[in-house]
Amino acid sequence: MTTSEKYPIGPRLPSASEFVNPRSCGGPAWLGSAYRATTPCRFVRAKAGGWVYSALQHCDPRKGKSVSDEVIYYIDDLEPGMTAVFGKTITEADILMFAGASGDTNPVHLDDEFASQTMFEGRIAHGLLVSSLISTVLGTRLPGPGCIYVSQTLKFMAPVRPGDTVKARVTLTEVDKEKKRVTCETNCTVGDRTVVAGEAKLMVQRRPAPE
Image (cartoon, rainbow, N blue to C red; front, side, top):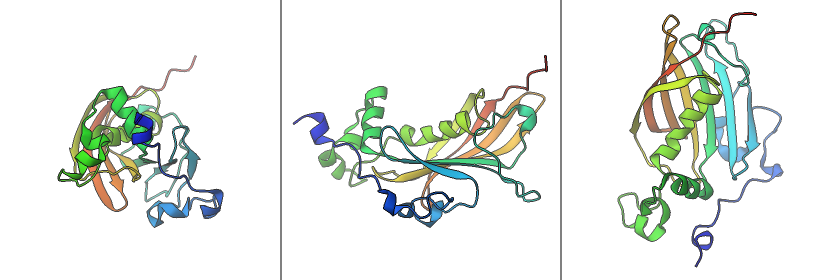
């Protein structure tokens, strides 16, 4: 039996008929009410399978302002309370590719028979695969392109199964414009359940001087 036969790639993707008003922010019906957002968002088909949800919201209760997820932020643009989210369904392909790239072939992630005998009673995704979605938010959404990790703490709260849709959220808690540093609360959730929690510190570039 080949590896591809033993570990088939991914669950069936939803058809267009399973969307609820796909041009709105409601998203696919199969994702459930937790993803029915009122902020700008989009669902796109990932190249490796699965669906990706992304949205960026400036959580300022005084302004109620939402901003695009294509903006590049500099340290002078950032304020505590700004929040960005990114979601993805963790597929069989993701787990296999992460195992290959990292070398972490722990059978609790890859072998149904082995994993069924563990405390998890089934296979789980790599914790660092799940938490890498936090890096996606930081590097592409908030603060966005150009920021650099200084540190990241992680606490793994619950397992993530193949087929689970994970939402990573980053919220700015401290902004030091003089030192060009930000601190962020970071977490990943599956539905209403927190699966990863932590804190990130990053360097953020200053806006270039006009020529």
